[in-house]
Length: 303
Image (cartoon, rainbow, N blue to C red; front, top):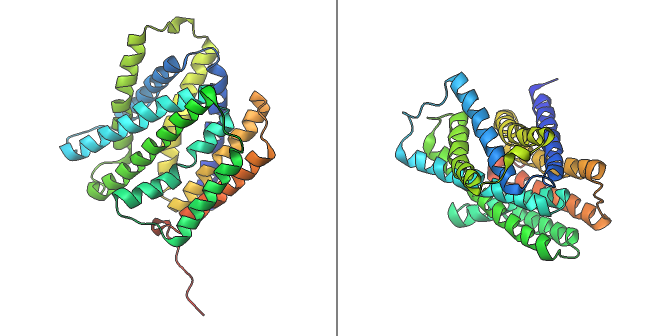
């Protein structure tokens, strides 16, 4: 088996594991309030990354200037303090498949924000791909939810925008960093920056975590280590082998794993219009990523 196929299988296996622990988290949120889940999850994640960093001696900050550190701080607040908190809040209120479906639109939102912030306009084919993905949204949400689900959906859309901003900051960071600091340094420091306010908020809330059952502790820890830490490490690793658009398309298949696990474990039913919306959305994302400038795709020479 070549390195490309190994990377594909590694990413798909990780996506399946992330989808599984996310679905299990949906069940745990029935007995653990979302704030306790969030801050304990981030406490586990930051501890895990800190241990790896200390073991590999990759936590030095002497080579990081103030500008780079401020960007890493912003990434930490956006991606971990804000996004992770909203993700768990929305997962508590929305079907797991809908939750995964909405998150998948981060690539489309990133494309539009790149146009506004980085002055990287999409080409016509990418715009058509984005339109196709939006058609998928309309089919998926044939009838809009109401009440708490609608509020959670709006919050989740806000989190997707924050996650897209994180992608923009990461892209900018790589243009000015020039490999001066490692991905592990960036990941560990950003997680630490994002975890601190959540941990302080969780402790200040006074929620009784002593009543959390051992099984629920395990699910919280698995969501931290698998969904956040290992997911991030594997994605960065496979990008050394896979093209950016390949990794993004494979990542969008996570909604399929979530749908399968949700049906098996949560007895959630995916309707025909939702299934069609998922397929059309993935097709739209494929087009957007396939024809991006960073995808490595080039038109075949005319014969």
